[in-house]
Amino acid sequence: MAAGQNRVSELWIAKGKKSTRINEVLYIADGKKIPVITKSNHELDRIFPDIAHQGIIAVTKEFSYTDIGDLIEISLNAPGYALLIAADHITDEGNLGAIIRTATFFGADGLIIPKDRSAQVTGNVQKRSSGAYFHLPVARVINLGRTLDTLSKKGFWVIGSDGKSLESIYRFDWNRDLVLVMGSEDKGIGRSVRSRCHQLVGIPSSGKTESLNVSVACGSILSEIIRQKRSKMEA
Image (tube, rainbow, N blue to C red; front, side, top):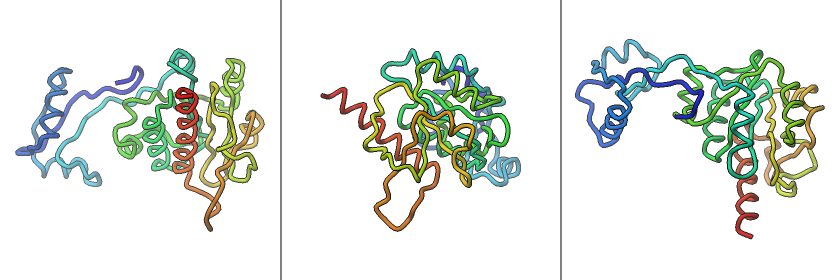
């Protein structure tokens, strides 16, 4: 598990639940000295009425955010170019969870979210991330604009996603330390954050739909970033 993330304090297993996957989880729990408690399916359904728990539940302590200074240091010390994602007041928990999962899949170094007017890393977000929140440091900041100023001074390029931008994500050179800024579902990137961006980029549309869901757009851009990085390494 990544430093700064919440830890599993207990593992609850439905009585009689058996599978290869369950055995793997129990093996990991034993190695990490995590207590395993057996409960009836009825009891799990009563405690978690709206969750498809599938007979196994990890009980964690409250999510622990990573300090922004530590996150910057982690990203700059990682191999290759640093890659951070900033979510500018994304309020939908499903979208935030999907972004965490996508960012983890593509190897981003961390995520930055505002403290106010933004979805936080709740239990629902953790579920939607499919466990990816264990592996992605998340920093919560009071003022996203000032945080981007700090990152700029550290040598990061601040790149904003804007569907109206004429600069294609496929023409832009992503091989640099960067922060990818994704805007809110309804308003996009706010004026204050937009003014901090060194460049705005867009995803060219080949069909009849003009825009993408923010988590899908994030995945499309990250895919291009990783493609360019690998192409440069292989050249």
